[in-house]
Image (tube, rainbow, N blue to C red; front, side, top):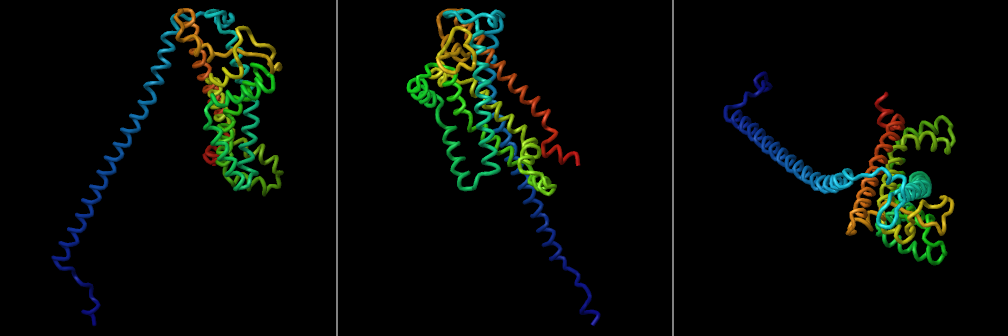
Length: 319
């Protein structure tokens, strides 16, 4: 009875087979690890190549603008209007800022409201339809929107080349970006935030303002900054709607029959003129556009840093 229950000692052949199988598994694991490392190196190489393909043209363009504009920079560009193929950029700077502020107000209100509706109140079927329509709108070329704005606003409604027509067209152009980023930012807020607020008996409007929108603020601000950068860099829609004005535009509440100057017009019109004064003015306008975009990025980082304490990851880290 004792001999039947005693453990069986493996033979030498079984030990050899076990060692062989263990060695084969180690070799297979080593081969798999080498393949993963090789794949990782290839992926990093493609990522570095993609980064170079992006950085090289960007650095080339921005560096070329700085090299051509800085040596001949004239500070009176801030205080002189454009005159013919020379002069300054005061009228274009003021017009660009008016356009940017107007787009931030109009597109910001509509885009944020649309993002809140899609994230919080819209049904699934209607939301799918509206998201698809927004994506289609974001894919429409800007020159097409500009032409539609020209036919509808400038000609049919008799607004003429004006600030109002430009603001409406540019707002339609950038609203999908703000709506998308707002919806994504709100959906990234943890559900536990809403559940905790509802458990405390807070009203839905208060929950939305204080509990949901605060953590979503960095994402919403990012969308608005991207929209402003796109609007400030557009030329084609403004050619059809804003026209151009060599003087400082009238009061911003005069939305019709009020053409405005803008920096992209000077870049597009003067950069290939045979006159040095015109080309220098185009270089200065391009440098100001780059500086404005950089300021927008810095402002967005400051706002995000100031509101980051409400972000979900920060809240989790404090715990």
